[in-house]
Amino acid sequence: MFSYNKIQSFNELELSLYNYIMKNSEKVIYMRIRELANEAHVSTTTILRFCKKIDCEGFSEFKVKFKMYLEQSGGNILTDNTSMIIDFLKKAQGKEYREKIDLVCEEINKASTIIFVGMGFSGILSKYAGRYLSAIGRNAIYIDDPFYPLNFKPSDNYVAIAFSVSGQTATVINNINRLKEKGCRIVSITNNESSILAKISDINIGYYVQQEKTENDDITTQIPALYIIETIGRKLYKNYKG
Image (cartoon, rainbow, N blue to C red; front, side):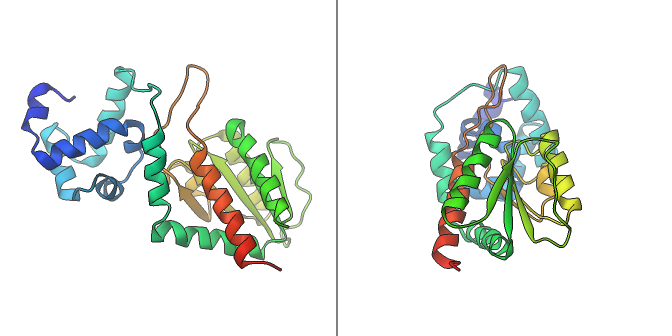
């Protein structure tokens, strides 16, 4: 996909974009063009020109071809994720992130109970989140069982917060659908905003880090999701007491 001749044809901005893409390969395939432009500090026009130079009609086609390229070249290689986490923390200080955190805090503040949902590593995080919010005086529980009995009425004021890296985990989605049927407001914290879970949520916070897998499991860092829930908890304790 990136032959020597193609790389040689890149101008300075395009080369900078190429370097960003290669350093953040698994993250890029889930990004929108404006997000990539902001993160790589280039214009959307530069991205489209870059796509043309590597024989892609647009950014959507590039993402499809790039994903295939990663799969063929064994792209899921574990790397030092320090810079990726620093990038996320910088982005988390932006206006859009702060506004979403505020929206989630407002939903939680109106709720009588917060239900955390997750499986696997995200399930462990949901347990932590339930304990964390309980420690600041909120009524919080977690669910990691698809058959967990939901004995509350649609009129009850509940908020469900789901953790999922992929946003495609069937058990989590099924639990969220059950909760939606009971009238729960749904918040999801996922790696991207294009997943099924994100789309069926009332509020989604996407963190966009490189997804990493071993042969048997997804070991993508949970630090962004942990940061998000702790930020929500601290803001609730500071601004929404009693």
